[in-house]
View 1 (tube, protein in one colour):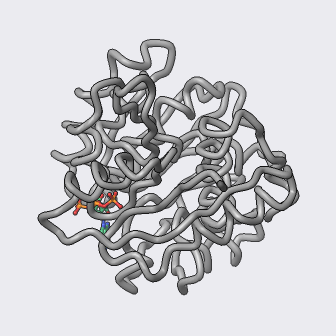
View 2: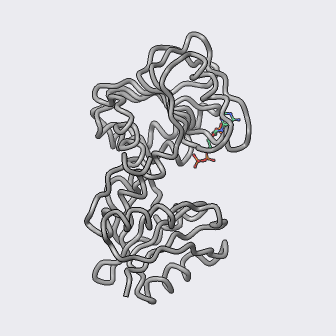
Length: 262
Ligand code: ATR
């Protein structure tokens, strides 16, 4: 029988994970079946249990269940503990394990673009779950300074307090969106502004060499402004593929090459 995998969320129809994992399987010769699983908003835990009781091997978790998945796991990786969110589940000797591969997915996508992370200065706009998940992997990949800019400054300050002991080797700072300035190697939009169609303003006193939009397939004022400045840009499809490759590697022990799928 094929290995059984699923992505669980609500809604789930839009998920591209089955398509990606089947593409990795075709490339690597792994025999698997990967399906979408819609869980009721109050039924995440029972749906996960049922999946693993039916011999499921691994699950990806998406909105709105990543924090619930984190709370449910009996064993967590370091990066999942720091992210306080889990997007990859598997069972080992009856123990539910959880990891968060989103941040490494972003790092791998940035590396595939040949943007240098070593000793880089990075500006992340946004201070929600998406930002929390990527700080530790960015620092482990060599980022030297990370500024977190957020519309609500207090939320960025809270995040900084939570994360600074986890990444002592990097300099972390915060600012409000009205105080965006300075020189950065990479600016990352981790807000949900392009998902809701809102504009972000990148002022002239903010200088950057590369711009990464975590969302993909949506109009993005952030990307429009970066393109107008002539800097290299990317949107989040590479990160999506990167996080899927990391999950595939955890479950199957084979790491497909990101560049084959973007
Ligand atoms: P996620 O888990 O995707 O990070 P989230 O936790 O809801 O989602 O966080 C959304 C982020 O986008 C927040 O940083 C939010 O800023 P606030 O903390 O001030 O709410 C940011 N955001 C959403 N819409 C925005 C907008 N129109 N302009 C600027 N920032 C916005």
